[in-house]
Every structure is written in C-alpha cells, then in structure tokens.
Image 1: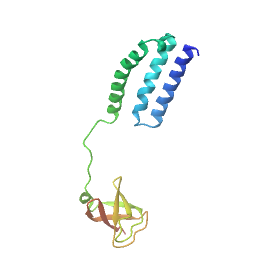
Image 2: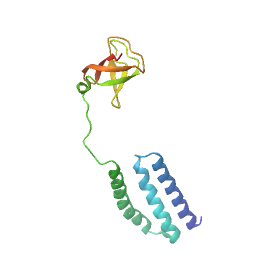
Image 3: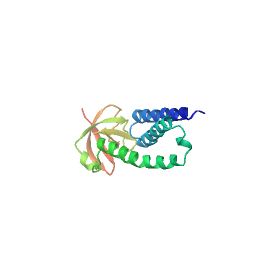
Image 4: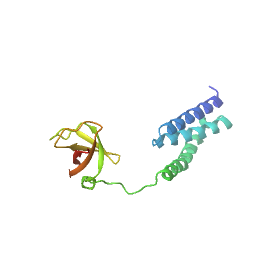
Length: 149
C-alpha cells in the first residue's frame, strides 16, 4: 500500500475521532488519539517512509505528551473544577417540585423532581405524575410531600 495513502487514512480516522468528540462531548479521550493520528498522518504524507522508521514510536510519544496536556487544559477552560454540590433533603423543606413517578402512601417508589434533582418521595395521599408538590419533611434522601392545590 502506498505510504501516502496510509498517511491519508490516519488523517481521516483522526478527523472522524474528533467529529465523534464534538458529537459526544465529555469523552475527551477520543480527542487525544484523534489529534495524534492527524499529526502522524500529516508527517507520513510529507515524509512517506516515516511510519516504517524507528523514530515513529518516539515521535508518537513526544506528540502524545503535549497533546494530552493541551486537551486537559482545553476542557478545564470549559468546566473549571469547583466544589461539589451537596444537597441535603432537609434543605428542600418548603420547596416545590413536580411528580416524576406516581406517589403512593407508605412507598418510596414515587419520584419528584426538585431543582433539577430527582428524589424518592412519599405522601399521605396518592399523587399522580405531573402534579406540583411541596416538600413538608425529609429523612435522608427521601422526602415527604403534599400536593400543591
């Protein structure tokens, strides 16, 4: 197979991996091999016998280090590390939400959505999915709710 064609295949595979990264953000490990394949493919297209030399693995390692650091810094700029958000059930007392799964008395199978989080819920009465509820009490990660009229 023509070495130039091998370089072109590397570039195409690298571009496909980068497109996959854009389509599924957060899987940054795809961007690293994609970028490395593009660089190695371009080198192979410029200097065709490159991949058959002893220098190819050495160059690949040398490229991998700055690319990996660059990708990590790039992603960190989008989502800088911060303190994790912890929500205690007791902090939800008095807040309103929406029933995600039907609430049945004395059962924790019911689910409510409150502030973009889903909580196991129960009530003294049945409450249908889609109804608005208000938290009256909490125990651990379970909340007790009543329907908002």
